[in-house]
Image (cartoon, one colour):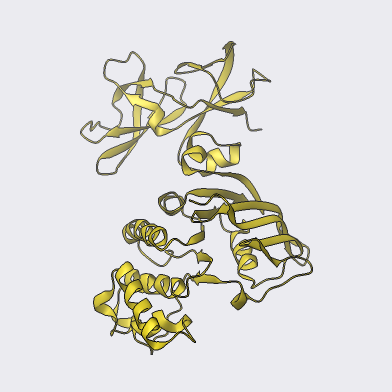
Length: 350
């Protein structure tokens, strides 16, 4: 992968009236990478996407695509001249056009033979070669989304933008399609930015993710680092599942929590009496031989695993992800032990 940035967003700010939606936002994306802006509703992620697309002027900052300034306080390149492909939440297919005509829509001025060849190539890439003469209403939601993707990729854009692309689909289809769409984007060589509020979608698709909150990127990192090395408490709370347990420093690089002593905390340990440690469900291991027992309060069956909510002796709760053949009843006390690879500690929330 070429490491030079295809997209650069620098000190972006945008407001509607007095309401500041995005402030001082910066990130860059290497050529061929898939980036994601992930955050709750109202965090500013769609506004950032609209600024990149050229649908909104920027109030401060600068956006570059392929080294060219496309948005600043003095430059506003029209959306159609930015070499951007867009995949919308509602697909935005033309109901009166066949699938081949939908895919070819952005290929104006391309000779007929080359246009037909490009349509065939993309239909094969998205798995719709047999459906080119059908109309959108004859396809499933997942197939329609793949048509929208093929249409966006047809003109070979420098950058592909996807705005909540799977929000109209059911959960199971969303999970499968997010993996398929990633494979299609990677096979096409495109660089892409995805906007979503769905963590599983972001983790399945993106190489790099920016957690957005109140118009500010809290952390830009790989999915692995966001989960195991969150930069702050908001990211730790927002990404994945977990609970915080009170902790105290008991020695050099050692923190003690109710379940035992942890080494090499990845945090500043100033304010030793005011720390909390984040425990993920995969940090708590079910072990019948362990002396520490916890009461099963709740269980969520997930097929291969069961997510247990457990009550400790103090009354505090932890989560444990356990292979589903360990099927325990509510109220049962089971043995648990810690297996923490990444110790994450923060100052206790007030």
